[in-house]
Length: 141
Image 1 (cartoon, rainbow, N blue to C red):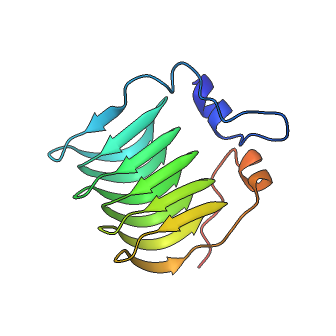
Image 2: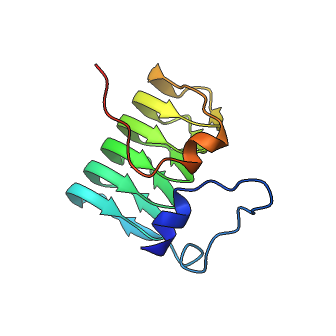
């Protein structure tokens, strides 16, 4: 999965945020009646309206209103309009007004809309943190 290796490295000096042709393809969708448990890796964008329990790796992830993710997310950009219970590792995170987030959101840039419900921590990290993120950090109590 070339895009995942490329995805996990945030652009450094002289590199652009341009996505590979695979990432610019049409997004993948998990409908409201779809439930998945396990590891989910997607080249490009993934829109979740259903329920995912486990780890997700994508270039761009959208948790749509009514969608639920329980687990960890690694992406370049994450947009949350639904429910998240877990951790996010993404340089850019957008939390919409309909979102409910419980957990930790590791980011470089974050936008939280008025009305969003967030319970947890949102620690800032430099882009270099995401450049070296080839696997998820261990969960600390």
